[in-house]
Length: 287
Image 1 (cartoon, rainbow, N blue to C red):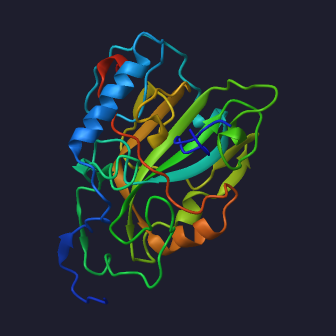
Image 2: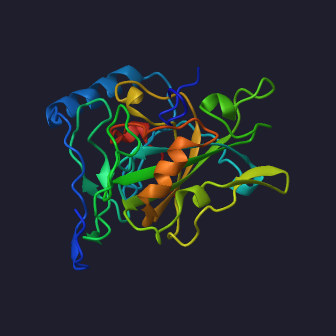
C-alpha cells in the first residue's frame, strides 16, 4: 500500500449520436495470463498459514469465502472522517456494470482490471486535446473506466495524501472503510463533475465528501484489505470494510483533469490495479 492507493502503503469531432462501444482503453505490454496465474500462486504461497485477513479486490458476484480472520465492520461513513480520495485506472473489482476484462496488462498494475460494460456515443468519446493524468499507469481518455476510493477512518484525522492521513499518533490501527464508485470518463460537460463529487465539508463533526453520489444501486459490503499491484504476490495486512456500488457513473473527463491539477490529496494520476483475488482462503464470505 504505497501512497494510499488502497494501493496505499503505510510508510476527432464526430456529430453522430448513435451508440458505439466504449473506448477499448490503452495498449500496454501484455504479459499473458500465465504470469498472472504465477502471481496468484505466489500470493497463495506467501500467505499460506500466515494468518492474513481477507483480501481485496474480488468478484462481487462470488459470495463465498473461507478466510477465518474476523474483524468488526467499520461504522457508517457519516460516523468516520474522510481521510483520502484516489482512483485506479480501470475497476479493481468485477461486478455490476463493470465486468469487461481489460486483459492481464503488464503484470504490474497497468492495462488490467475491469471496464464499463455499456456503450457510449461518439460525442462522449470525442478525444480530448491534451493528455489527462499522465503517470506510471498511462494517461486517461474518454471511454476509460476508473474506480474511485473514498477512504474513511475512525481516527481523529483530516483529509490528506496517503494512508498516513488515515492514522494518527493516537490511533495507528483505526477502523477503515472504503466507499467505492466506478465511473466511466466522457467528453461531456453535462456529465457528473468530479470536483463536485469530491468536495469536502465538515458535517456533524466529521470530514465528509458532501457531493458523494447516491443512486448507484445497493452497495456490496464485505471485509477485505487494501489493494494495488504491490500486493499481487503478497498479502495486505490492513483490514478494510468495503462498500462497492454496482452501477457506473458518467463523469466529465475535463473535471477529472482539473481535480488532478489541484486537490488536497496530492493525486496527479491514476493508481494501478491489483489482480482479482480468487483464492477462497483469502476471501471473506459476503453476507
